[in-house]
Image (cartoon, rainbow, N blue to C red; front, side):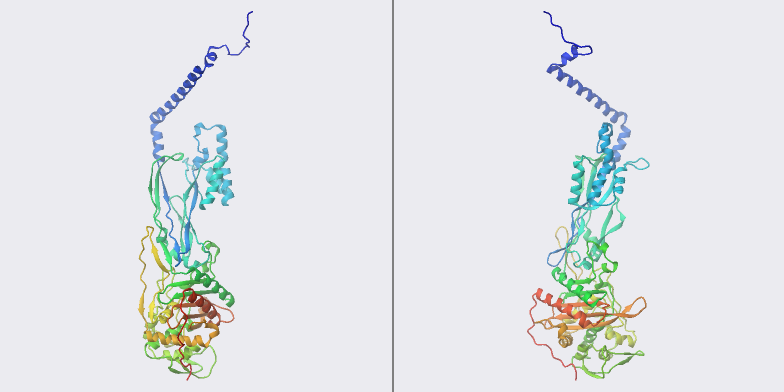
Length: 624
């Protein structure tokens, strides 16, 4: 029986080619033919690109062959005296994009299928949504930058800044989300962010960072010091940026391309004299004093008398250095070096120091103090009404008598008084290195008699809180003026120490004169123990209540209350000075500034292990 093949019209099962490819050997031969055909097409394309179209493609290659990028230097760290970080740079990045890559999702246009094109067209919207969800901001702004791949002239846009100073963990989250959806085209550039771990602690000293209005070559805003030491030391803290030069193409950086790296040089790091523990306590105590006195503002300074080191410098109201944009402009300033005011009766100890050093006065010098004294067509009075008093010089200080101080000061010529006040640092910047420091105002020797009388008890001149604190510290330091300092050391990125400006040290009054003035200050402290007592320590103090000048009218309006304290008197180590601007109600420096001074001073003495006093107080008579 003959069997016929089961065939249908139109089939090719009986064709020679089908039969041949049915065997393994034939299939291998067919695949080889296909690969050969593809190779011939690619070879032809290469000939066209490198031969027939050489000029056009070479031009493109030259245009995009080299890319450069800045590598920002890490900003120097600021430490307190104990090595605790006060300001540091935290890793962060700028997120940038190449819109030409976004437009094709990183694929070559000639080889994109319809599905690839649809996915790429959805990319700007999807990526913009991811950015908004993680960073906030405006969706349309992100979208426009991602979707605009060329200029109006048709030139490709290969760089657009999407976000600045994004924390690295946030950037990683964004990158993972974009990648998980199969998109490419976002890149990151190092851009460290400045952080202040203790928020508002010593913020008026440290300062803050602000965005520079000028754009860099990559159309990015830079951050620079905007106040405090961040501003004063900005160049040194900033360091020197590095640079990377690399190969790139029309589709971005070539992964295996060659590159040349110039390492950045980290900024100089600084250690301050500030003690963050004491600073925190002083900040809190000053804030409470300002609130209690209902004052506009307050200043507190604690100094090491021997070295001039500023252990704590507090300003209130203050701000968080991480968020300076939330503060009033006035609160961003360091009032301890910017606010000029008449010091009031604290100035009397400087006047008395000059008189004592000239041999005109001793603590027991007698003076008849009437109820008022004529001066320049008006009368000078004391803060309390009294008939004629018989006071000693120590009694004049203890009672804070304006009249007694004026009568004693008239025994010294004006030029000599001015020279002493200048030697104490008045009328000149302390050069502590804080930005915006004022010099105050000190009349010269041609001043009128009335001005001389006013200066004697703390009016007619202006000072900063740091000037006045340093001047009193000179009296307590055996008569030696030591300019204040707030920077303890500076260290370069390679570890070597940097030179710092030398402190100014000079003798103003003798050791004996210093002892006598301290005895007068102890008389005042002993006269008002409820405000100035520190258990176990002999304390010297002087209060001040001065009328405040209102610039709007050029007249006196309101008061500035203050008090300075030093201890222990047998060997003074620590000074604290508190100034309250425009307290309401009680304006006595003794009652509103005395308690915070003793609280701060007592903590500082214990913190630094200063031994308690073992000597007996001086006991000069106050009257005769």
